[in-house]
Image (cartoon, rainbow, N blue to C red; front, top):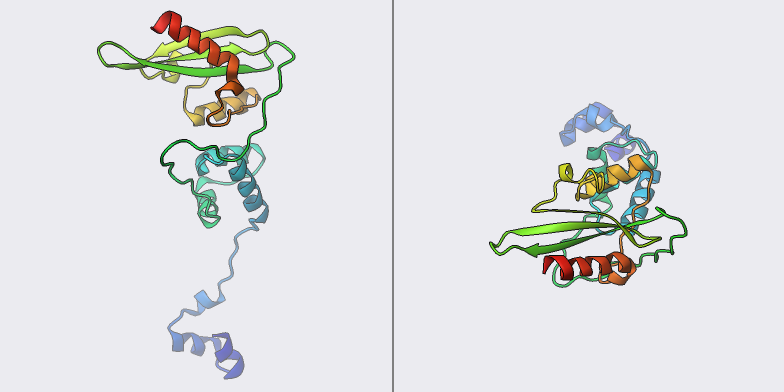
Length: 203
């Protein structure tokens, strides 16, 4: 188009007619805002949270002050090739995660763990254990077959879904830290409590 207009002195309409293109399409200029800062922050968050999809990354971006809807973010997420691959085989550690420091004050850090087992009739159930890490005291337990959020108001505000946890984390202004895969001793106190719960109660 540009060559025909500049080299052959064709009018814009004639050049468009020759190639079967609408002149409005040729004159169109994108009005999309600059996405460079959003793309950069999206890549940073995706590298920190390797298993987060675009919906959970959307929550983190909005927390950082980015005004973006899910459709636009999904487009950028696909263009940056950040789609989470399905895991296969055994669990492998993805990247490195900073070790947790020792809590110095009560209620500075709470630890959570899940224990699961099967009843004699074959039905599965789970028990959520919440521990205060400074004094290693149990804050509460909740058990059930599926542990919906409606059954956990006295133990923890969110349910066990990642979206609920992230929303609750943002509302309460608390940090959320995952242990590295295959490193249960990073959460040693609550792992020990869960083991005692299994030995003394569940078994």
